Length: 101
Image 1 (spheres, rainbow, N blue to C red):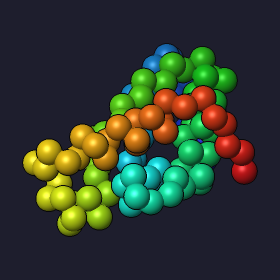
Image 2: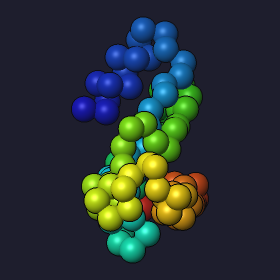
Image 3: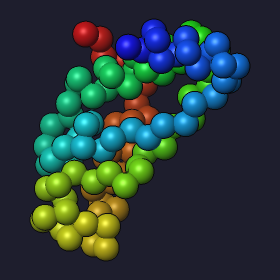
Image 4: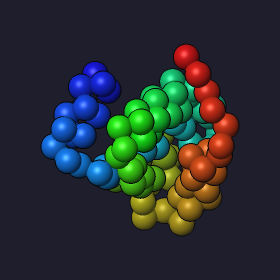
């Protein structure tokens, strides 16, 4: 799928792609849970594929996506506790650690 995705964008002359990393895909239970390697691998492959096609990835860390457990436990985005949860998610996303299949 990624081959078609990146090739199609490249053939249209696209040189950049903006996407969001799903918090729930990386850290579904907030900082009390474990990191999901499959989520990291997915985004690593996506970024690598875009770069291989000369397409610059522009990554955002949130786009209306919150793990359900944080919504239920803390009340979602209105909770002042959420910034304490967001920091570990952001740190994981900016680590240079590479996971493979």
